[in-house]
Length: 93
Image (cartoon, rainbow, N blue to C red):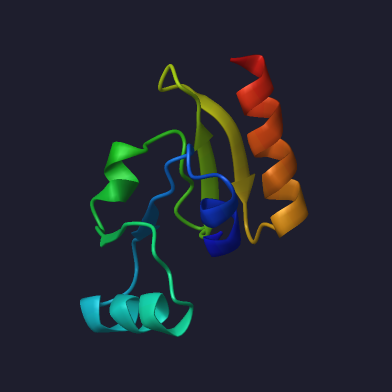
């Protein structure tokens, strides 16, 4: 996602870590040189009730410019599939 966040500066990326300690989360951010914002929040599972399945972590949500969930990917996502989804959502706007 880091590469895509650089390739698409007009798209807001946000990492949400729901099961890691702050130290583990910071280590992940440092190890992958992540520059987009990340937060640690176990309560996020409640905020995304019906959108985020707790046992399907990681989950990637693409929110469109109208704040609607435009795409959801459960499990790992590849660069090419995420890029394709971003392009599709952008073209629908």
